Length: 362
Image (tube, rainbow, N blue to C red; front, side, top):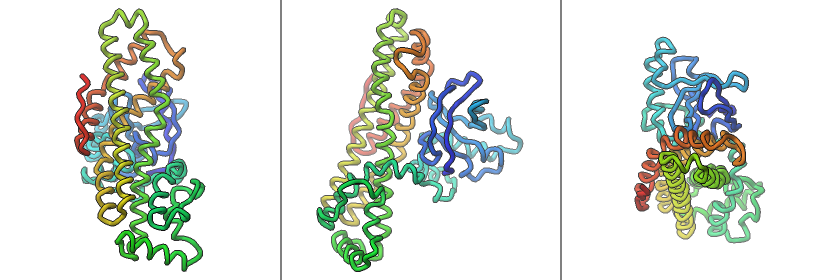
């Protein structure tokens, strides 16, 4: 996707006002630049779809630090832009997607019948660099298994392309020897090894991306538990059954979603561990199928969790500041709780899809 930055600052009373995050649109889990979508309106092609704190999709027409964000509902497109009925239909379809990360979009756009240039559905080079901290975990086992421990890198300095770099060595004889060894041990024909490496690299990057996305909000999630606990101890909250119930629902829902995401990420890891013990084309095909079929479910739930927690963190950046009990209770009721039932349902469906038990927390 376009490598512009996302600034979610809003104005005019919008509930997401004042929130800023600088991230490439190609790496965002909650932003879809419409420039990659085949629309007829040039004005709409400069807009973005974004998820707000209530997990609703809005069309962001404009955003800058001074005037803030101008957003409309997808249903209002034809009222705002002349002769845009066709574009509205496309955007309304896009609004049903639970996440806009590149991995979810690959299958989501295909299922919606919306053609795009597949080359735009890639992470930015900057994000691939960020993810290189996961490289050793995913590449070292396969290198050790096929070429021996002495061939595996001892640090992440070679970046996310470590495995592919092994076959870009100036020593052509060494490269040919490695290719033959890999072909023999994997059963993948020699000519197909480069494509195999590309596919493996893409699969492990997708898992690394979801892990990084989750880990990036864990500190705020931990702070949120304290914030909710403090709110429940306030006299105003103790005197309101609605506030206490809402706080309980928010905490239990987010705890369930967070722990379940951890469990699903662990299952992905177990899939890699199993593959490394029996590396061949068939075992990789099974690994890839299991992970890619879970992209939509993982992306949608992570998107909801990230948007909820990130927007809360921007609204309340310090637990000792940022509004009294009434302000905090109102935020829980109007911003945190809406959409959580949908989020839990999506997580349970994703668990079911990969053979994990269903959870019923209330």
